[in-house]
Image (cartoon, rainbow, N blue to C red; front, top):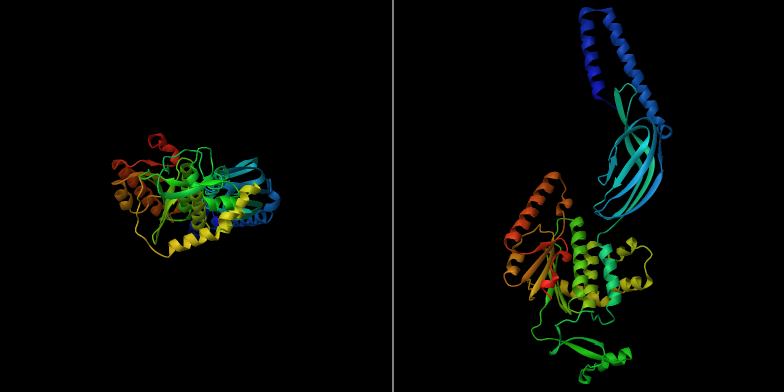
Length: 421
């Protein structure tokens, strides 16, 4: 319990009254002081009784609630409150807010839930501040209220899009778009089902025997255009990493529908991992695998956030998570730190823009670079001062890229693809 502003003023008055009564030995002042002390004691005891009976004095409907929300978004729960005392709800959790914060009698309070980090949050009670009848004292009490929040990673939505895209790309990953990258050439791309007009000399006999139908080999065109994704995981924290991963996976899915091949680079403080000329299906699977690797401690954790899923999509995802070949591929890339080599006509660079931009500057001199910058990387800041510094640094990075005429967007849909194809 603590004194309110009114209680502090009354205490100061009482101290002055005590000094004056002692100085002048005035009986009337002494009796007045005694009355003030007894009144304050009554108010304090009344507050203690109210705090013990808070469960009966304050009722919330509903008494329990389950909420599902994507990290970075918000959900609102409306609660009906019936209170015999003035209740001021406090916010012990940074992702909870109330409007209005205080209420007496019957009314409605909106509880806004806005988590930035994915996870499960269980709350068994709400904290409220109540004031004594005379307003001299206040204390904090616990009001029974059970809230379960399941905050989904930002990655989940593009992950669902990626799995659906895989279902539409076919076994060997041939996209619907006809790309200039595949045609006459000498470098093998992949095998695809035979179509009327394909040359018989390009039959892939091994694939034909394995699949029990006719397959032909496809080759890359000499000097064809190429696209590279740079997945820049040099981020200030888990919120930015989730955002970067979601943007990267969404970008890969959209580009896989337009390109015959994608090259893929993961850029971190410790390593540079590069995979060259992946066909669409393999590009999406690789992007999923890397995103799961960075967002979750173990890729299998993703299944905790999946609602009842289409069996085909679930099998597809389990196949990616359990694919030993993909695991070995990543492990092989991790064995050796390589210099960053882009070697593409255009580069989509997904970044939080919180690190040195020299690599982007160097790349933009020799190739077309499109920067996909996540929103609000300062959400990972540990203090308001750090958030302010990060916000200013981000704004300076955006301004620098604008002066350098490097296109910057929040997602790939903002970049005019028609200029490239």
